[in-house]
Length: 107
Image (cartoon, rainbow, N blue to C red; front, side):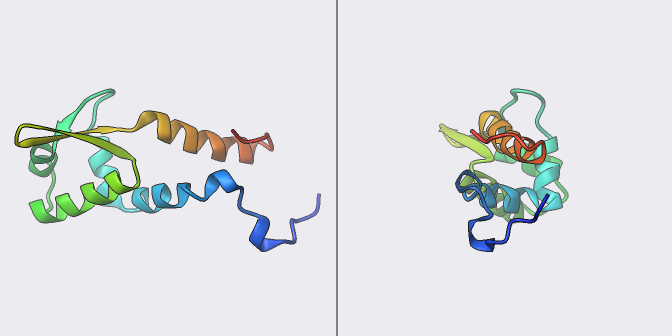
């Protein structure tokens, strides 16, 4: 097997939006925040901040990054913002990576 030689064409087009996801998931604090969620659970920003060792403003910053990357989805209800993990997006993202590693075609 020979290595692909065109560096600019090496990244599959469907991988380009995944960069933000991997950047968001690359921080240990954001990973810990995701680990707070039980399957299909929704948590408020306050609940996440209460469980964290970080300042509320720092938690808000991390939640913003996770939301911008669409790792977390959110909905405002009254004064509370509820967050949940965007499972379909993460399943597709990791599925694309797994297919690539297995030498299969991508979605």
